[in-house]
Image (tube, rainbow, N blue to C red; front, side, top):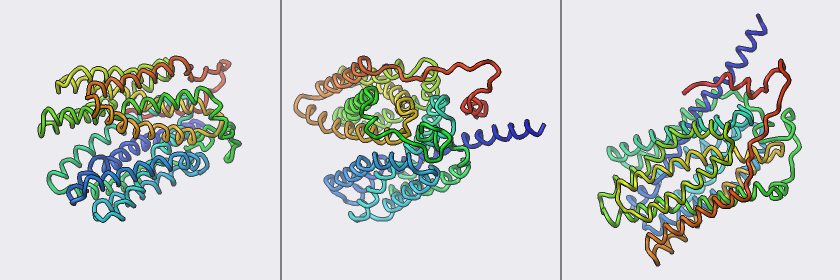
Length: 431
């Protein structure tokens, strides 16, 4: 009887931590939505020149790129992932407060550096906490839940902050967003640190050591699968990042002031699609495997850009843009999941996340730069066709060089208890 009671309590404890992780994703997405496009709008309202606004945004982007790999190393090493997320959350709240109260260059540039730097910590830390809580076998569905709650949180915050901007001022958006740090920290405390298995959270070779041995950093670059995956994500961002800005420019030229509503819909529709599709993507990745879903998610990008090259009808543009939600849902789940597959037993899961984040960021930055130059010289249709070609190249690389990474199930004799991941799954909470 006592044994049953202890077992029930052990199952309930991870379930509470998993429920808190759901809401951690929700509030984190809402908190980060405070940056979004509102930074540029606020600075413009304060009389900043476009060149100065571009400089601040570039500073933030560079800070994010530079800190990706060091952040990955730190997450692999540090024992308390919750403390790291808490410190980063406080830093985000500070940056939002500075954006809301100050408009001088030094203060704003400092806030932009904080914004870029902590962004390198928060996303990978959530993936590490997830892996530490549920283990490798249950990670696919867990990442799908993360994506769902993050999308709902981002959409909710965007609606509320848009209303605040209309009723009050853009500056108030930052102060309200900063206040979201409080509920975020509260739900973070609801995750029991004892539930986060340190070894699992960094893909360590021995899950029962607090300071496990790790494979060399060089070993990542000797894995052809890892190199192929990094390359395809670089090309994915190179093909994808410029699509929505290109469509926005087209609408602005064709519809003038009426384009704002269409652009808003183009942003919101994919987020709704991600919230709906992400749990499905997690389940499919766990059953079908990673490779088929990765090919479909990547293929949606050249299909989308190719269709955008053929039409400027606002209704058709909205329909085509739903493909962005499909890519977002699949890649949002698969990126961390495939990296967990590739680094399982190396202790370098979070370093791999940092490397992928760096190359993806470079791809996104080059996308808008190169596509803008192509479009200016040859027109929008050619710009979209060039993005289609890059997207197809990513699909080809996965097809040729990226095998299935889903681990082969280990058979157990009948009567042997299931893994701790499977036992933990029995305590999952519904949405």
